[in-house]
Length: 100
Image (cartoon, rainbow, N blue to C red; front, side, top):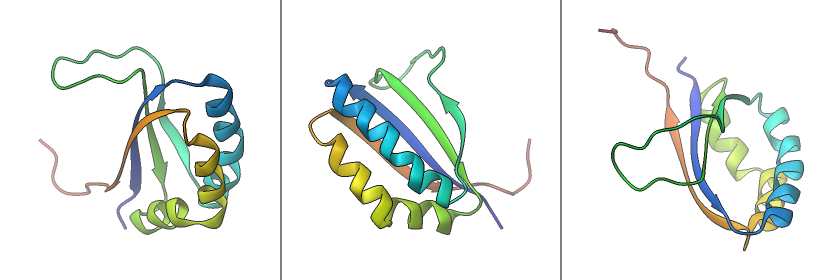
């Protein structure tokens, strides 16, 4: 079964509110088996508009990634993030096909 991923790009405008969101989202991420594969670190942006922070969060399955986002626990955390920045979040199914 392919894994699921959140691809997250964010510009934080209110660090205090964003920190509260980060503390609150741990409950949902833990419940759905999430693991960070990328969280900050060096980045180059040769194409497209960059954001200040980037993350890739891996889930055991695409379904788990979607369920986590829709969960009551994550939606509570999401309320804390409102007004704390601008975020792009995509939920993507992993690829298990032939590699180059």
